[in-house]
Image (cartoon, rainbow, N blue to C red):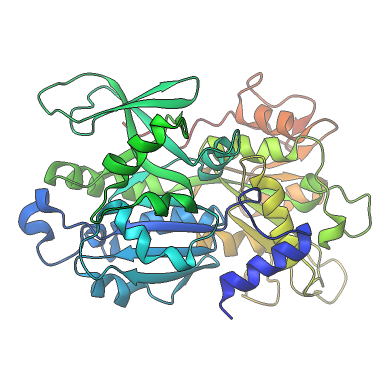
Length: 449
């Protein structure tokens, strides 16, 4: 049985129901079959999403990292042109807990027709995106938008000063009412389709005759039925469809990938009033926890949950992304449009008295403390990163590895986090103070000119 199916069954056990459209989405589908005709010789021998950006890192790597860190554990790549290269690079791989698989269309079927190849493996609801564009949004926020009234398709939209290359999307009260075909001769501002969708599996039935374009054939039909929602996101966007935009991607994407992180100590997030809070049945968040994580997600920060308690390497703890507890935690946050990028938990008891926190020190597994492990595994910018602690010792441990420690006082966690970020009154106040220092205001990490 494949890993993603095991996770689905564990989630069903936790929630008491199968993972349906009402449950957090587990699956992401990425279209990687484009020819890249406008790129000419640059894409002659390689699929467009596999064009190199920074050394060995190709464009698709940036997309897959984003999908994986949002907690979509089943990633399906729909390949076409030169699909053997996609298959060779990704089939069967795992990335931050996500399993990658590749399906290949036998002939060009279009962006809608490609879904027919995956019909047998598609979930009731899934995320879908183009493999030649990166829209750096909070994917779980789009998913939350899709749950408002059960639309068949929910689109991530982007406002641009010049929509000539893309065409425009008309939205009224959150509902898409029209698509305007692209016209390169008309350089006008507007809202474009950002190439990321939350879809119901029923859209596959509309992909006929083949070949079929989901943008030109399926979405307009759904608009006539009032079944398409759209939300505008003001986040970094790039597609690599032209030599000029590919060059811009190579210049910008290495820096876009790097961002600050906020580490949340377990007891700052979880309500530990009901025992050890490591079992799915015990899961309860403190006031403002989901809102705090969502706020950080929307501002582009990595968010990691850190459990510094030693000796919890059991099958019911937070240490493994496939455990019922971690699945329940991710599901709870996803319903609020939020996600944690990873969970770092201590794995064994360090002997002796006076041993320092595993936040900073060897935890007996990887030879590095929890924060060091996170910095080794993710492109984290130290500038702007900090740890939210409950105990002074935790904040002091973070300080010893060069991170500010924000000590929680009483109050909602979202208020504490916003204060630390400088969005609700500048410098940290009484509810949020770093031991021996002042928490500086932190700007949005995704500002790219």
